Length: 99
Image (cartoon, rainbow, N blue to C red; front, side):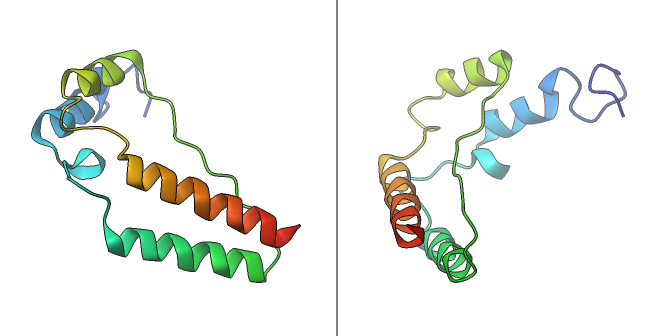
């Protein structure tokens, strides 16, 4: 269904903005990255490296309305520095192993 159709489940980002307001879904509040998620990322990158699969990591862009809502909750919603640094390091190490 077209995102511009009022019947769309996330028309005008209504669902996404509710997640941000409640700290739910992929916008869940946390003081630190999930150790389990970081382990899963390491396992995935090791699996890819063993199969000579190149991985490109990125943080996806957000629509302006979504970004503004996130910034309004910036004390609770952010890319945690530990997660960012760990992902950057893991991706860089995976890249170096391929070279």
